[in-house]
Length: 430
Image (cartoon, rainbow, N blue to C red; front, side, top):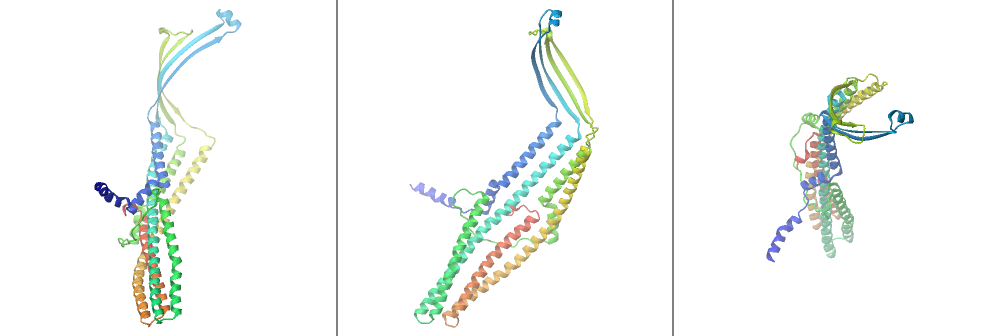
């Protein structure tokens, strides 16, 4: 019995362990539909590439045929051959092989398939980084909602404590009924805020559960938003790094390369296609339904064939023009994304710097509001202040704490946004 209890003492903390950000990210990468689709697209691309590559290897087929034929002759043929029907049996088995010697469409198609596999590789990284960032947002939204809920509860408790003090002072005829009613009203006004904050926690938790694919019952997320200012990144360095390493730019670069290959393929349409072939057939042929040993023979063949397109009804001309403009559009899209990436990095950099300054201000404001609340409460207890001063101090203290929590969340997310904008792997930033 003691041994059983000891096991439960050791296991229970593990079972009750709260979800960490690392666990949330791992679950999201495993369960998110976009991640699953991206991985499947990558597997499809690799399969298509290997399938296209297989065309370059010799194609070998085993062929065979057995056939019996009965021909009913006309009256004239019957009189000529002395029979009213003819029988024939044929049997053949062999091997046919072919090998592409030159085909611009096949070679360029193989190159395009390889580029597409590289594109899907990078696309998996893009999807993964987006999901990691989304998980960070959802996870810290839960922490923020929980801390806001705790702040609302704390503010309500502060108001209730003051209300109890006012009641005592009223009973001692030290304050008026008006003050007591105002203190009670302050408590009543805060109670709905606590309810709304509790509802926000439930909604944020449900959003996180849906995002990471949580199916293990009630989820527990514990902890607090912690922010440590990251490394100093100059804007010029951030832009240079982002325009070189952003996976989205690599995706468009590979897309542009594929369109270029397609354009070359249409331009080289009139090049000949060369193919070598060889075969061996062992056959048997008899003018009856039976085949004997002397009825068998062998056939060997080999050769080279070519196909040289001459005229395709101007279809190739228009397909070439279409491919040319698709390539131009790919170049335009790539350059446009570079400009947008620079703008995104600039915006993320400035937003992060602004959030750092805002957070420092809010930290100072919280300290000032806490001190002002203590002074207001002390002044009121000594009948030097008014109930309005205390109510204003309570409201200011609560609003500054909420602003500080929001500023800390904003700084954390803006830092991650900056890292994402310059192409960092967010899964390594945990």
